[in-house]
Amino acid sequence: MPHAVFVTNVGFYIAGIPALLLTGLSKGGLGLGLGIVAVPLMALYLPVTQVVTILLPVMCVTDLVALWQYRGEWSWPILRLTIPAAVVGAGVGILVIHRIDTVCLRLGVGVMSVDYALRRGVFPWLRGRPHGRAVEAANDSVRPRPTASLAWGTLSGLASFLANAGEPALTMYLLPFRLGNRCFAGTTSAFFAAVNLCKLVSFSTLGLFSETTLTTSALLLPIALIGTYAGIRANRRLNSAAFTRCSCAVLLVIGLRLICTSARSLF
Image 1 (cartoon, rainbow, N blue to C red):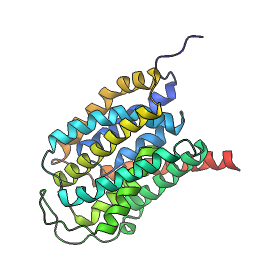
Image 2: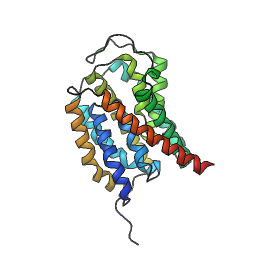
Image 3: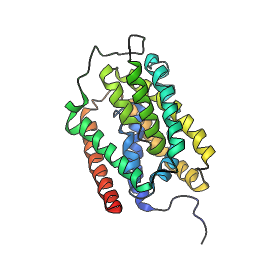
Image 4: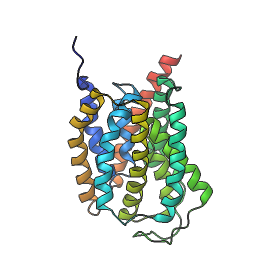
């Protein structure tokens, strides 16, 4: 039987198209971390590691688009602490990626999805109270705490490397600073552009890319770009609160299903 040059699972694409639209919207600056939706949805049909490998080239391209759009509108005081920490987290991911059982990884993604959905959508008071004035543009007035920056940066880098799930950790770290829409989008764009570049080199070294994963990435790229440009256009025009709540509800259902299926496999 000839080897397929792309993923042929129909369910994967049915789940992947809306997931990538949400990811693109998040990359474009709308949704506050909704890119985490992609892996849980696609992981219903493929192993988590394969899903992450397929998504990585797509994310690298959308990162460049967002980085150009929000160039110079990021918070350097935050980035200079979190990016090195994220590289450390990715390094830890390199060491453990082949030692983590697929079922456990799927369970971890499910737990993180449920936790994030509850914090952002169902019980937003769990996020904690924001402090200070909103920072409407990139400047040096932000004074992040080094310990928190290093901890959250490392966690985000590790979660991103293993399951493309670094956005919730970074989002929960950034929310108390009350960054303006464009400053928030620029900071997350710069952070994940650096993280995904590191991942791209690491995944290539580990031999995770194949003809199948790269061809599938190319097929999905236009969907992600549509979402990214839509997110960029909507960044200043739409109130994302209702959109985020609805997406968190979907994420909650997906996360619960991943937890249930993983628990059945384990027990």
